[in-house]
Length: 390
Length: 230
Image (cartoon, rainbow over all chains, first blue to last red):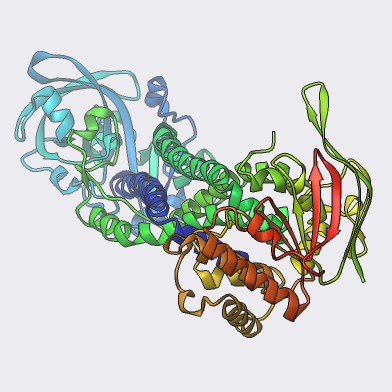
């Protein structure tokens, strides 16, 4: 009964109803669209980082700390047997890190020298360009780093390093390829060379700093090595996106506030404008709780109808965004945003859509109910005379 | 059969630090089937008396019994139930629900009673026949004249066949022709259905239809007489 009456009341209110519904639908749309972009960014970035760097997880030599460059020199150990088996079967790759210095155009630049198997296919890094020819040492570097140092493909740069005994040595190395990636963690201040060559240069045969593995489920405990699963390896990205999401929540709150305001205003106005109607309903025997239910339901119905209106224009628009993406209009790497391409492709999961709907519905229910508490205080005789009871 | 019993009833409203007494020492009885008018000048307490009888308000002192229910002791839910089941209201300004059609307005009290759709349809169509508005069932109040609106209000008041109809200045906003038409309709309902009608009015046209006239002056019953042959 209440539902039927509420439907009649809100549809009977005409343009005012449709305006409120439109504003509410806009809230659904903007919240879903914004959150979709963040989910899309996270998915894209995580995928790119997995493809270019992390694969299914990593074992770190126990002293290795990416945030402490002084640990680099000693962060290496003999590759354990269990992991060597994985490497031999192509299910893992070993990477050796060493601090070094390069001198492009006579300038000095400290870098991390990374050795990797040129024949690996576990990550997308184009290591095939590391295969040696003419007794030269080939290296690959990222395009951002190359631009920064004004290095071009085919250039020779002087590389200086220190072996395990502390002896310095230097040699010209050839930039055999400049790769383009969105993943900063494989290109920033990094020079990649062949692993056997680096092991020989450092006098560290069969040693590595990290072992990247293919299988996400392989998390066997190995003495002297720490296993890092993808959740840990992606924590920085997750935290950064979380921080950005909090920043975007201003827009989120603004849209929700707009929706709340639309309904709150409608409810307050309705109770004030329809007090005679409320008095008439009381005179006819409708109880106050039923009238409160009726007005609250009218507010909720706005939010429900807004779902349908939002679906009418929102689904095609959100699909369009998903296909063409949103151009960022800047070099994401300059902003320190790893794994981010030129365009953002949003992802709308059912959790996001359902979550937004539930959130807006709960908010609107509360906001619809609050002004109706005035009805509980309203005397029928005052209401019939169009007065509000103080 | 006594429908309403009022004994030594007072009704006061606080005004600033003092109080205003709208009804003073009222003693009245209303029998089933009466067609009674409460007359008097503006501010004499007519509407207040009707509101208390209709359990929309409560007395300050004294006792008011409506169909065996002591008005003051009723909870909000119980008084709502009393109004829903036994009392119909007719207002000076019609008080029709603006977004509903004529049919829906008349149907509204039956929905509150929880009647089935089939029963509602029959009752609404009977009520609209009574007031001669069967051709306007799909119209909205804004599309009707004042007389038609008041006829819808009457249909809404009588559709549930209440024992008592309280009409507050039902003809005040109507021209002479419409007033007579409305009064004749109510008189017919009173005679054929036995419904008790209590009006508040200061309209001379209404008085000519009454069987009993109660005159209120300054909140007191100044006169209570059987008229027009009772």
